[in-house]
Image (cartoon, rainbow over all chains, first blue to last red; front, side):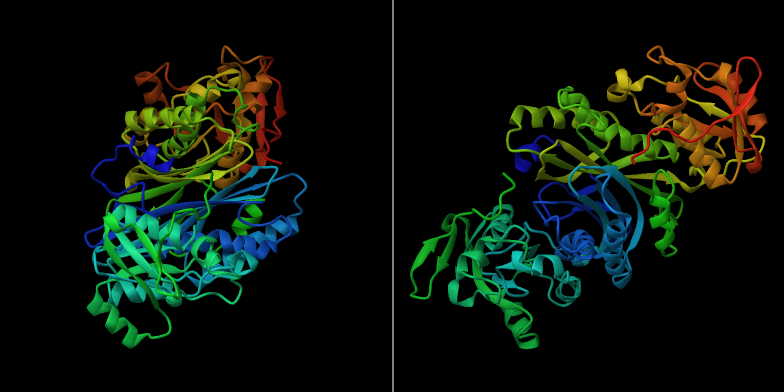
Length: 288
Length: 288
């Protein structure tokens, strides 16, 4: 659907990258781009009604932070729209905002405005502006054949807790952008297969993943969850082989190699523990 | 509630104006500020389920355009989050986007990204970036005693149609910002009394309105509707007397004087057709 819409939309030259990446990339200053993203979280989809409101508020910002991280940038200013029903106690709204302001303060992000509307289900929408040096911008669309694919942490089972408590990988993303400049990067929100699929599609490439290399979270109950569950909010990025070696020397634990970028015609393959290959189909979390 | 939250939030010096105006105002370039606003529209609150989807999409953008207009600026880039349920036909989504892209194209605004999520009720959230020359920025908080209060068009009864079809007053706002530089400006979304109340509160002023001067829309059924109904999306602004006279000479029909800014202690008064004065209480559209 987003693709269908994207095809109908024209933008002018001040939009460096529009629909189809984690953030919109806009002209800004002589040496920087502005990053612009928004994320909406809804009760029953992204959290449950009885989850801790502090953590719900925190997640609403962290999800957008993660998009800015994936672009190699730094978050700067956000607006928050909150949809609540008439019966919501003031104390709950206070806790939602406490979760937001805590995270905002820690990352030096300004909550510059917002709105409160009436909604039966609790709803949080965050618009976030960030910035990135032109030389450090990382897109989804520029993975190269032969690149090694990395993740920044273990995957799967996030719905059992991590999705409300994850630390957005800003520090790690800035480190990568500054010292390694990945060819492509995305954050894993929809699931490894789905999000790697975005990189492959936008970059017109294929890939192979190795089952034995995919780090499973303690909370993951199966490889399937690591492949498809989503909400991990880890970085998924690709590096040429020589940089990959250097990264593994410098940070052998923080970043884990899980596969390699191939020709587009090879699609996405998984090599299992018995060295058998099978195609992975994109069926991660779908909004429809 | 917004006030309560605003008090708890600290921003750094790159935020010229945060919570409490139509838009957040951010440092941008040597001679411009960036304006940043977001608006969420929900089925059952801002439109009905059976309203024309083209007009719903159009309104979602126009409401944010109107906020940028009130700041004296020009809209540039927006992101659109759409919440729809599984049963929404693709044709309806296409029409929603058609309403948006039509307006975006006409005002040279880029739709630079967005998201689609699952929601029982149709939901549209628009984040908009604009810009304004530093010398043309207009806030709510700087009305002066003795200023004449103007509106850019007739008020009341908007819910009977205008709220879905209004033309955001960008051209008029830019004209005013360039040639008259109003002391304060806001767009009337919550109703004349409520929105004038925002100017008075932020500017620490009082005001008087004259019943006979308030222009009623053809659709308005009473003065009450012009005072309280909201969704007019007309500009409400204040000008010193000498500028007010000049504006009335130049544009006697486009802008209508309706009252005057007074000392704060006088509150907000209405002078009726019999020259009797009565206080106007803020009771426009309340989200709660």
